[in-house]
Length: 173
Image 1: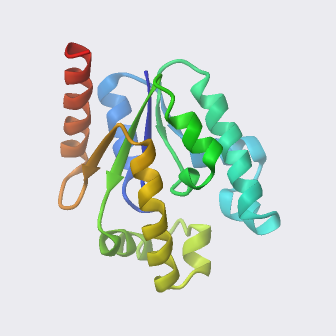
Image 2: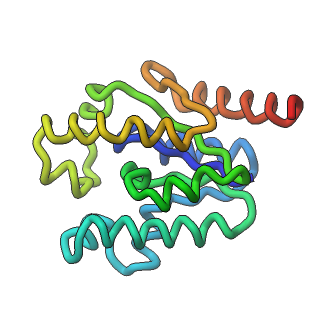
């Protein structure tokens, strides 16, 4: 089964995804990395050269390609849920989508200290980022099979919660 991690920038999708993949013995796929390898430009560079809409369409195509492969843990980009066709793709019953939830303030603290500047963080004000965070919440919930509040939890604890849910799902249908 493909597992897709969604959530706002800075929530820990990559960190949790790598650990989860290791625990499950599955490959780990970072969608931003795959984007860079496929398109020859980082998401930020691509958005700057083209548009966010064109980036989201390309991101969708890369996600679709990854989902056609066997089992993997996929760390998505924070805004992938903004494109309706991406949300539709993720709600397929063959995929298990985990929404990593955290408070906006927690996300902002992580983003400020992140040296891998995300394109929207560098060009939006704090208020605009908060608005973006609020707008994306409904989309994350729409695609999620499981939501995990990550506030104050270690990546190991989060991974244990995901694995427990996966195990319960296997035994209870």
